[in-house]
Length: 133
Image 1 (tube, helix red, strand yellow):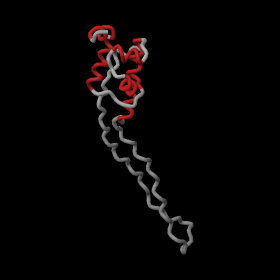
Image 2 (tube, rainbow, N blue to C red):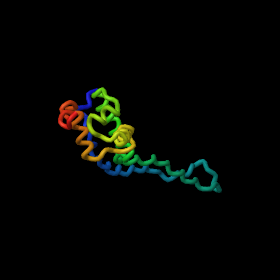
Image 3 (tube, rainbow, N blue to C red):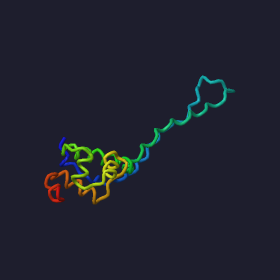
C-alpha cells in the first residue's frame, strides 16, 4: 500500500446534527364492543409502543484512537524504508523510545513530528541526506 498519499493529519470531524424527532403513531381510543355486557369494565388503553433508541451522535475520534491511527501510518512509513525501528531512529535522529511510543499507538506525535514524518514519507532518501546520514 502506497502511504505517500495518506494524510498524517486527521481532519476534524464535526458532530452530526441531532436527528429529527420521530413521529408518534396515532392511537385511536378503544371502541366499546357492541357485544360487551353492560356491567363490563371499559377497555383499557393499550400501552404506547416503545420508541427506538435514538441514534448515537457522531463524535470525534478519541485521543487513543488517533494515536493508534498515527501508529499504523508511522509503521507503514518505516516499513516502506525497509528499516528496523533502531535503524530508522538512528537514520532520522528520532529518540528510539519516542518512536516506539508513536508506532505502538501509545502517544500521538505532535504537529512538528507529524510534519517531519510526512517529509520522510514523501522523500526518505533526500530527508536522510539533508540531516547528514
